[in-house]
Image 1 (spheres, helix red, strand yellow):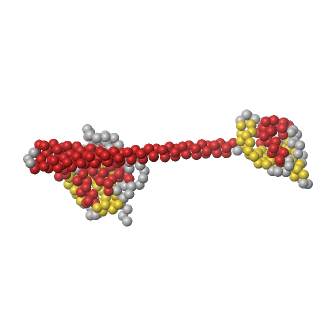
Image 2 (cartoon, helix red, strand yellow):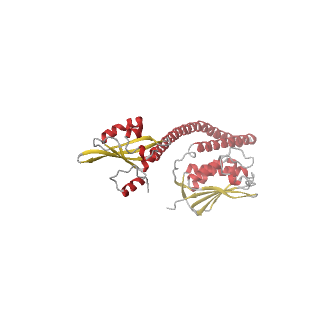
Image 3 (cartoon, one colour):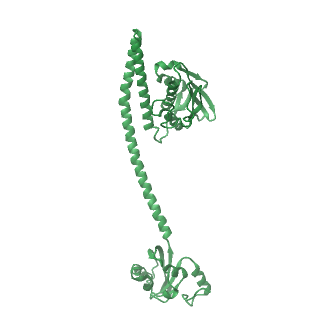
Length: 376
C-alpha cells in the first residue's frame, strides 16, 4: 500500500490515490501557512520525505529566498484572490526548473481556510520558447545580411552596366571604323591591309562577346527574378544571330529551318546571346572550310522548339562532355574563361528549357537547346 503519512484524514483513500499519481504537483496549505497535504510529485520535486513537508510551514520548504518571492502571492490568496505566476524553482538535484504555479483559495462559510497549490513544470516549454526566439533572431540576422548582400549585388550590377556601356560603345565604334577602312582598302586593291583590319575587327568582336557574357552572368543570370518573354519572330532572331558572327565566317553558317513556326515566346536578348555562344563555339572548333548548321525543329516532348548548332570539329573530349555546360569548363585548348556555354545553360534554365550535347564524336558535335512553349 502507498505511504500515507502525508494524507489528511478527511480524504478518502481512492481520491488520495488518484491525486498522488498525477504528474502535476499538488499541495494544500492552511491559513497559517502549514502544509496539510502534498502529493508524490510535490515531494519528488523538492526531494524530501512527507514528514519534512506535511505539518510544517511553507517557509521551511521554500527557504527564505524563494519564500520572499512567493510571499506576496501567499498573502493575496489568503485574502481570497487566486494567484497565477511563473517561478524558477531549484529541484532536489540543484537544477533550476521553470514552474507555473496556481494558488486557489479554499473558502468555507465565507472564510478563507487555506489554499491549494497547483504547480506544473514548464521547463521544456521555456526551452522551446528560448529556442524559437533564438531562431527568430537568427532568421532576422540572415534576412538583414541577405538584404545587405542584395544591395551590394545591385550596386555591382549597376557598376558593371555603366562599365559595359563605357567600354562597348567605343569598341563598337572602332569595329565599325575598321569595317569601313577594310572595305575601302579592299576596293583599292590593298588586300593585305584589308585582311589585317578584318582580323582586328574579329578580335574586337570576341572582346564584345565576352563583355556581353560577363555582364549577363554578373547581373540578370546570377539573380532570381523571372525573365520577361515575348513573341519573337524566329527568322529575325536567326538573322540577328548570324549577323553577330564575324563577317568572314558568316558564309559558313547554313540555316536549316525545319519548323513551320513563325514566332516563339522567349526573352529575345537572352536567346540571341545563347545561340550566339553556340555558333561562335562551333565556328571556333570546326575546320575553317567546313559548314556550321543552325537548325530549328519542332519538339513534341516537351511541346516547343529545338535549336541545334552542328559543326564538323573533332568532338568534345569524353571526360569533358558531361561537364561542358558548367562554369569554367573549357574543351581542349579553347581560349576564354568557360563562360559561354555556362551562360547558354543558364539562359535555357530561365526559359524552363535545357541545353545539352545531342551528339559528339570524331565527325563533329551537335549542341541542342530545348525551348518549351505553353501551346496556348
